[in-house]
Amino acid sequence: MMKDYTTESLSHDPIHGYIPFISRSGLPQGEVSEQEIIDHPWVQRMRQIHQLQTAWWVFPSAEHTRFQHVLGVMHLASLAVDHWYESLCDACRNVPSRAYVECLVRMAGLLHDVGHGPFGHFFDDQYLDQFGITHEDIGSAIIQRELGDLLRRVRRNPHGKLAALEEIDPAQIGWLIRRPARGETNQGHPDWLVKLRALFSGIYTVDNMDFVLRDAFMSGYNVKAFDLFRLLHYSFFTPAGLTIHARGLRALINFIEVRANLFRTIYFHRTVRALDVALADIFAPTMPHLFPGNPLEHLDQYRGFTEASFLVDVQRMQSDADPARRALGEQWQNIF
Image (cartoon, rainbow, N blue to C red; front, side):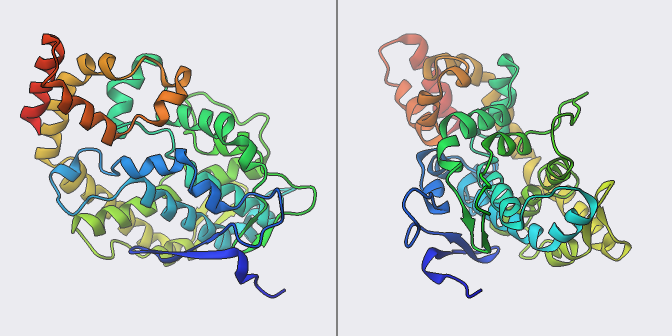
């Protein structure tokens, strides 16, 4: 069947080249395009949250955001399906159509970071932990409560359309993006879905393969950090899960080494760690002035709560009439 170019657009990316996605043009009435999910305020919010929580203050070129990263992860999800779908069908029974699987993991890739707060994982540790939740819990809630109706109406990706009776299940997307909890069982989830979780939780995933390439490039560490094609090419599904052939081990080892080096030289750089310590000292007393409580109970406010809004608000504090707020503002100004 001839490719329908009228429904496809391309976004250029410095890491992956052209990233195809389904645009609004030419779709049947009632169907939702990938572009409409990308353009949704919840996804656009990620433009205002840096990928490297505080390291962008230390590495001037590392200004990339969660938004650029999730587009890359969405693209890698398609590449993974292209390489691994056939083996998934061999390893599992009752696997949905390739179009369904690809739509599912593309949306999971696009939305896996949608629950992040300002400064990314730092926000999890310094604020969300008191509520016993993570950004993945918030992301799962956003996917099901805020985006669910739209996601059910996504019916195609750049490589195919869903079968007539297939419909994307937002709960499956929400489950895929959450890391397995200790003691968690896979009961109630089909085996093919359990296998697909390896795309988001494991040694090498569509998430960390993108951020290793992207962070290495944008920070100036390395232009081509590891051999992505070889890692995908020699991986496949078996009944045991995601498996790699012996010929791919060198690529996997190289990926692990590069990731470890990024932690040593970028993520855990001494100045980055010093910034994290300085922020931790004043983050807890600052947050009650900026946000009302558990984000799961205040999703409307959370949508507008970004790094950009946070930094503007704390800078305004230094001229506040309230002495406590003014003192906090002055502490933030010392960090800036």
